[in-house]
Image 1 (cartoon, rainbow, N blue to C red):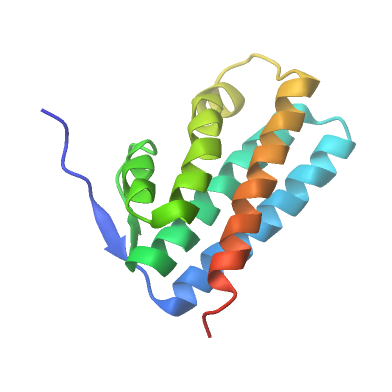
Image 2: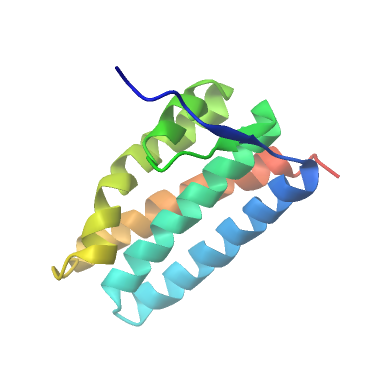
Length: 135
Protein backbone atom coordinates (compact mmCIF):
# COMPACT_ATOMS: atom_id res chain seq x y z
CA UNK A 1 0.00 0.00 0.00
CA UNK A 2 1.53 3.34 -1.04
CA UNK A 3 2.09 5.98 1.58
CA UNK A 4 -0.45 8.80 1.54
CA UNK A 5 0.90 11.95 -0.02
CA UNK A 6 1.81 14.69 2.40
CA UNK A 7 1.34 18.25 1.20
CA UNK A 8 1.78 21.71 2.65
CA UNK A 9 -0.17 24.85 1.82
CA UNK A 10 1.63 27.44 -0.30
CA UNK A 11 0.87 31.15 -0.05
CA UNK A 12 1.40 33.56 -2.95
CA UNK A 13 4.56 34.86 -1.26
CA UNK A 14 5.92 31.34 -0.85
CA UNK A 15 5.06 30.50 -4.46
CA UNK A 16 7.06 33.52 -5.62
CA UNK A 17 9.93 32.49 -3.33
CA UNK A 18 10.00 28.99 -4.86
CA UNK A 19 10.05 30.54 -8.34
CA UNK A 20 12.91 32.84 -7.30
CA UNK A 21 14.89 29.93 -5.86
CA UNK A 22 14.33 27.98 -9.07
CA UNK A 23 15.74 30.91 -11.08
CA UNK A 24 18.78 31.18 -8.82
CA UNK A 25 19.47 27.44 -8.97
CA UNK A 26 19.19 27.26 -12.75
CA UNK A 27 21.46 30.29 -13.20
CA UNK A 28 24.03 28.67 -10.90
CA UNK A 29 23.64 25.36 -12.76
CA UNK A 30 24.41 27.13 -16.04
CA UNK A 31 27.50 28.75 -14.53
CA UNK A 32 28.73 25.41 -13.18
CA UNK A 33 28.12 23.75 -16.54
CA UNK A 34 30.20 26.40 -18.30
CA UNK A 35 32.97 25.84 -15.74
CA UNK A 36 32.98 22.10 -16.43
CA UNK A 37 31.67 21.15 -12.98
CA UNK A 38 29.14 18.57 -14.14
CA UNK A 39 28.19 17.13 -10.76
CA UNK A 40 27.39 20.57 -9.33
CA UNK A 41 25.56 21.62 -12.49
CA UNK A 42 23.37 18.52 -12.43
CA UNK A 43 22.61 18.79 -8.72
CA UNK A 44 21.67 22.46 -9.04
CA UNK A 45 19.53 21.69 -12.08
CA UNK A 46 17.58 19.11 -10.09
CA UNK A 47 16.98 21.60 -7.27
CA UNK A 48 15.88 24.21 -9.81
CA UNK A 49 13.29 21.82 -11.22
CA UNK A 50 12.03 20.82 -7.77
CA UNK A 51 11.56 24.47 -6.79
CA UNK A 52 9.88 25.19 -10.14
CA UNK A 53 7.52 22.29 -9.38
CA UNK A 54 6.71 23.73 -5.96
CA UNK A 55 6.02 27.13 -7.52
CA UNK A 56 3.66 25.70 -10.15
CA UNK A 57 1.86 23.42 -7.69
CA UNK A 58 1.53 26.39 -5.33
CA UNK A 59 0.10 28.56 -8.09
CA UNK A 60 -2.27 25.97 -9.55
CA UNK A 61 -3.22 23.97 -6.44
CA UNK A 62 -2.30 26.12 -3.44
CA UNK A 63 -0.11 23.34 -2.05
CA UNK A 64 3.14 21.49 -2.66
CA UNK A 65 4.39 17.98 -2.00
CA UNK A 66 6.00 17.65 1.44
CA UNK A 67 6.91 13.98 1.70
CA UNK A 68 10.37 12.44 1.82
CA UNK A 69 9.83 10.86 -1.59
CA UNK A 70 10.46 13.44 -4.32
CA UNK A 71 8.60 11.20 -6.76
CA UNK A 72 5.35 12.14 -5.03
CA UNK A 73 5.57 15.59 -6.57
CA UNK A 74 4.93 13.93 -9.94
CA UNK A 75 1.48 12.90 -8.72
CA UNK A 76 0.75 16.45 -7.59
CA UNK A 77 2.05 17.92 -10.85
CA UNK A 78 -0.41 15.71 -12.74
CA UNK A 79 -3.19 17.61 -10.95
CA UNK A 80 -1.71 21.01 -11.88
CA UNK A 81 -2.90 21.06 -15.50
CA UNK A 82 -0.79 21.30 -18.66
CA UNK A 83 1.92 23.35 -16.93
CA UNK A 84 2.28 20.68 -14.28
CA UNK A 85 2.42 17.95 -16.93
CA UNK A 86 5.11 19.88 -18.78
CA UNK A 87 7.30 20.13 -15.69
CA UNK A 88 6.60 16.52 -14.71
CA UNK A 89 7.97 15.33 -18.05
CA UNK A 90 11.35 16.91 -17.36
CA UNK A 91 11.38 16.29 -13.61
CA UNK A 92 10.73 12.59 -14.20
CA UNK A 93 14.04 12.49 -16.09
CA UNK A 94 15.92 14.54 -13.48
CA UNK A 95 14.90 12.84 -10.24
CA UNK A 96 16.74 9.56 -10.91
CA UNK A 97 19.98 11.59 -11.09
CA UNK A 98 19.54 13.06 -7.61
CA UNK A 99 21.05 10.20 -5.62
CA UNK A 100 23.84 9.69 -8.13
CA UNK A 101 24.89 13.34 -8.14
CA UNK A 102 24.57 13.98 -4.43
CA UNK A 103 25.54 10.75 -2.69
CA UNK A 104 27.42 8.41 -4.99
CA UNK A 105 31.09 8.75 -5.99
CA UNK A 106 30.39 8.46 -9.73
CA UNK A 107 31.12 11.30 -12.12
CA UNK A 108 28.46 12.86 -14.30
CA UNK A 109 29.13 12.95 -18.02
CA UNK A 110 29.16 16.30 -19.75
CA UNK A 111 26.19 15.36 -21.96
CA UNK A 112 24.13 14.26 -18.96
CA UNK A 113 24.83 17.54 -17.18
CA UNK A 114 23.97 19.56 -20.29
CA UNK A 115 20.62 17.76 -20.68
CA UNK A 116 19.88 18.22 -16.97
CA UNK A 117 20.42 21.98 -17.22
CA UNK A 118 18.27 22.15 -20.39
CA UNK A 119 15.45 20.30 -18.63
CA UNK A 120 15.74 22.55 -15.59
CA UNK A 121 15.61 25.64 -17.82
CA UNK A 122 12.33 24.41 -19.32
CA UNK A 123 10.89 23.80 -15.84
CA UNK A 124 11.94 27.24 -14.65
CA UNK A 125 10.58 28.88 -17.79
CA UNK A 126 7.20 27.24 -17.17
CA UNK A 127 7.24 28.32 -13.53
CA UNK A 128 8.14 31.87 -14.57
CA UNK A 129 5.18 32.00 -16.95
CA UNK A 130 2.75 30.53 -14.42
CA UNK A 131 3.79 32.74 -11.52
CA UNK A 132 4.09 35.98 -13.51
CA UNK A 133 0.42 36.82 -12.98
CA UNK A 134 0.56 36.54 -9.19
CA UNK A 135 1.12 39.65 -7.11
